[in-house]
Length: 152
Ligand SMILES: [Zn+2]
Image (cartoon, rainbow, N blue to C red; front, side, top):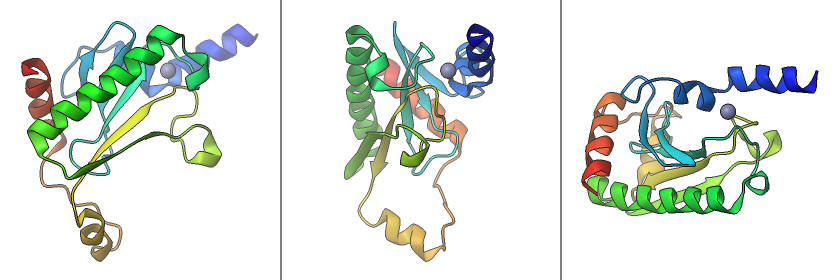
């Protein structure tokens, strides 16, 4: 019974679903490593907002083995390098939301957010009363990051 439940949850998980699709602007997967992958956030906070998640459907950092946790951090660092070169951000917000109380959107599959930031970007958005206006389409961001990742 426990097995059936976990398989069902896995089937509904967006991260597990995209891994079964070919990589491109549809599934937004920018790069696949051996234990973790990089995906563009469909609802980005800023342009270039990516997430790094393990291939395995696991809920928290302490559920991962050392190799997977290391790759998660290496891909996080690589994402910073690529974003810095391609988008010239002034800073980054990087982190994990673990559990509903912490604001995690997807509870069962741990993922690291990498959000490039520019001076004044929140002030600008606040002035638009919560409306997020992004300077480029998701598909354009995907194509830019994919190309930059391959050239890295
Ligand atoms: Zn999953």
